[in-house]
Image (cartoon, rainbow, N blue to C red; front, side, top):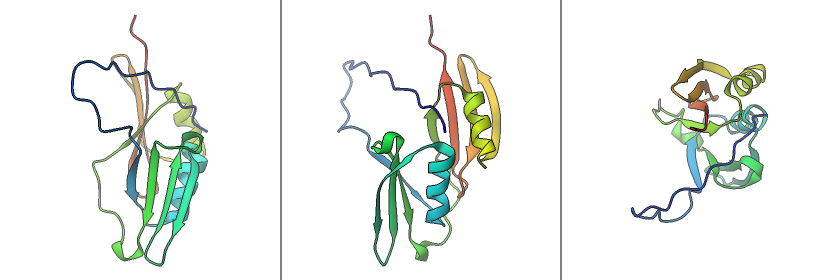
Length: 141
């Protein structure tokens, strides 16, 4: 399981304030069960709720089983999701360790761990091809 890092509080500054807290990101998926298994078993998210209707299945997942998180949508009539430039980033304690563990659990590598200035980054793929970024930024002294 990936070890998540807590997010540092934002500086309120003087700019516009957000409407509210970030809740979730919707991802259209081809196979809801394989996507749930990936985000649970490889990434380490926990299911919050699952809704099933005749038209769709929706599963919300998040770290610690709470939002913010992702919302997996499966609507059979939509077909496979189109290629996307969207990626999901997770802040982890150790990119190399999290990357190796995710690969051991079946994740497909898109880009092996690399360094950019004070940030370590790697990219994996979920079952539908969405890029998953693992990153860690070293604190600046």
